[in-house]
Image (cartoon, rainbow, N blue to C red; front, side):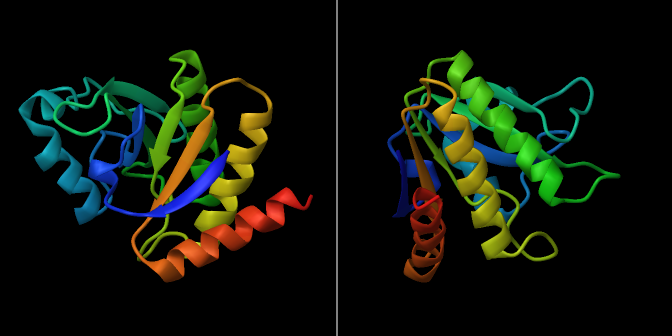
Length: 168
């Protein structure tokens, strides 16, 4: 099941949160930087990478002091690769694979790749909903994906994509 919530990602009850990042696990927005502050030192220590990850990769760490036990870091950009629809799609697929591997039942994610200089809200919503819906059909986990947005208007946009997807 895919659902949408207007909430603060850091406090959503889920088995794992998705955190879009750069290849060196740097956050891509101030809201995502806030996860580090709330997650605390134990969470931040896990973000040190010996070498950059490839765009499209996903890695799981403990959630530290966050509400979720785990965080799945989705690599959507690097120093040389900007945010693109294909990179976002590959990262979402990797996130879903990690969730299945770890048998994570409930995953909460922001709109991956949306923001100034990146994808439009509509493009990010379409890619996220299409990729998650396709991947959920192929595996048992996760059982629920909650797309966490900041406003009611964003919720309505994402829910329209979900309704459109269920008619296919």
